[in-house]
Amino acid sequence: MRKIKLGKSDLRVSEIALGCMRMSELDTNDAKKVIETAHNEGINFYDHADIYGKGESEVRFKEALKKTSINRNEILLQSKIGIRAGFYDFSKEHIISSVEGSLKRLGTDYLDTLLLHRPDTLVEPEEVAEAFDQLHSSGKVKHFGVSNHSPLQIELLKKYVNQELIANQLQFGVMHTGMVDAGINVNTKDGNAIDHDRAVLDYSRLNDMTIQPWSPVHGEKGVFLNNPDYKKVNDKLSEVGEKYGLDNEAMSISWILRHPAQMQVILGTMTPERIKNYSKATNIRMTRKEWYDIYSAAGNSIP
Ligand SMILES: NC(=O)c1ccc[n+]([C@@H]2O[C@H](COP(=O)([O-])OP(=O)(O)OC[C@H]3O[C@@H](n4cnc5c(N)ncnc54)[C@H](OP(=O)(O)O)[C@@H]3O)[C@@H](O)[C@H]2O)c1
Image (cartoon, rainbow, N blue to C red):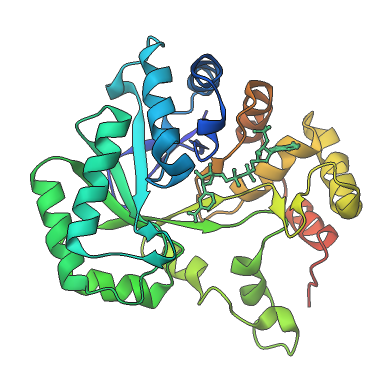
């Protein structure tokens, strides 16, 4: 599997990462199979959050990893913090205690990356900076980033935070394209010209921040792959995939990776066979025309 640089850091990460949001639903043996399959496919990056399975996903990961022969230093662990029951909390105290909770549940001394999960409008960036400094100097967190943040929210943090912000985790995929729609439709009166994402794609490229697309195979009505409500786009993905020997499922991930922003897709499947199939997505590079044909088949206008 191809590796990319994560933001301005020196981390070499697999283009596909495994999101562990649903790992608490597995028993330890099934979780072990998932981790071993991902590892064999060249996936070296695992995404967590303190809230996944109310902490149980991180625990299951620790238990399952222990049963494999994979060493901690062969993999990169990311967790996210800041979402609480009914509110957001970027206070220094909460950031530090959440990281300590994740380290304990994951059974590790350090996180490779820590993301602020979803913006806290009551954020006091000086406090975030103090928390990051403490976590960084103690070696508990190597790198920092954000999730679901707009460019100006990132700029506000950057005014105070001393470390680089290397990644922004955002929803993106064939059926969730807001990030590219506004740019494609700029200066038209089309509704797709409305910029819900505040030019975050261009901002990320300009500032060398890696976008980590989450829920990559989801549309508004759930998983869109092989879903009759999304027949046209599935047919197009299959048609283009024939040329490359990939099915529509793998092609949906290739479509994301074809974007030159060099994104790192966060896959959420807990099915080993699907992990293997999606991993084939990194072997091909579709043409520009094929990329736009898929975008169009997903119901988007090209002015
Ligand atoms: N930052 C954020 O705000 C945020 C929000 C949500 C998620 N995330 C992260 O992103 C990761 C991925 O999110 P996600 O799990 O929603 O992503 P996803 O990969 O779009 O969806 C995974 C789900 O879809 C099912 N699925 C996958 N491929 C399928 C197919 N071909 N046919 C039928 N069902 C299929 C999986 O079932 P099986 O497991 O049975 O295969 C699983 O339930 C999470 O694990 C988490 O780490 C971040």
